[in-house]
Length: 151
Length: 175
Image (cartoon, rainbow over all chains, first blue to last red; front, side, top):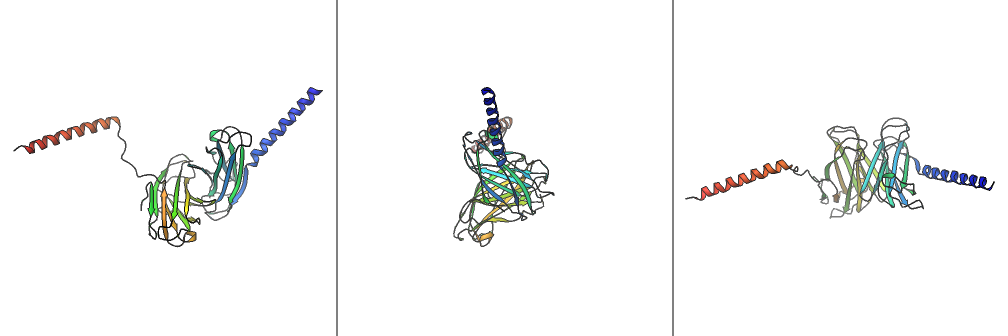
C-alpha cells in the first residue's frame, strides 16, 4: 500500500512538473499586433538568466504571421553584442511560422524587434526561449520579456 | 559620398552617408552598422534618418533597414527590387550618441543594397544635416587573390620584365 502511494505521488509530481514546463514554454509566446503604418515596429528586450535550469547560452525565436491576407510579411530580428539574426514568415495565415533563429549571446539582455515589409495592420505571435545550449539547444532556462515600444 | 568601413559627413552637407553592400544567400544573412550622431558644428543632433534601396539584379527577398536606439525602433523596406527607387525614409528621435542599424532580408537569395544614413538637427528627420559617423559598411572589393599557378606565372613575368629592363638600361649606358 505504501509502495502504491509512493508511486502515485511520484506520478503526480511528474505530471505537475511536465505541466509546469509546458506552461513555461507556452508563456514565452507573445500575441501582439503591428499598426497599419509601414514603419510600425514593436521593440522588446528579452533577458536570459539562470533560473535553476542552467546558465543560458542562446536565445531561440520565431514569428508567426497570424493575419489573413497576403503582404506585408512579418519579420523578427534579434541582436546581442555583434550578433544579429533575422527571419520572416513568408506565408500568411497558415500554421507555419518563420524559420527558427538563434543568437548565441549567453546570459543578459537581447534586443528583439518585430517589423513588417509594408503598409497594413498585422497580427503576429512571437515565440522566444532562452536555452542552455548553443543554437537553441539544451534545456529551457530563465526567460523574461519586457516591452520597450508597442506600435 | 560613398562610405567604406567608416565615414563621416560634415555638418550642413547636402550629401548623406551612403554605402553599398551585399547580403549573402542565407535567409538569415544580416549586417549590423553603428552610427554615431554628434554636433560637428552643424548643430546638436535630434534624429537619425535612414533609407535602403534594393539594387538589381532582381531577386525574391525584400531588403529592410531598422534603426534602433534606447528601445525605440523603426523599419523601412524597399518593396520593389531593382527599380531605382529606394524604400521610404524612416527616422527615430534619439538625439546625440550611438544608434544601431540592422540590414536584413525576408528570405533566401543574395541581395545587393544601398543604404543612406544621416543625422539631423530636427526631430522626425527635420532640420539640417549634422555630424554622422557610420561604422560597419563593407570595404570596397579588393584585388582578387591569385592562385598558385597565377603567382608562379606572375613571378616569371616579373623576373623576365626585370631582366629586360636591366638589359635595356645596360644597353643605354654604353657609349
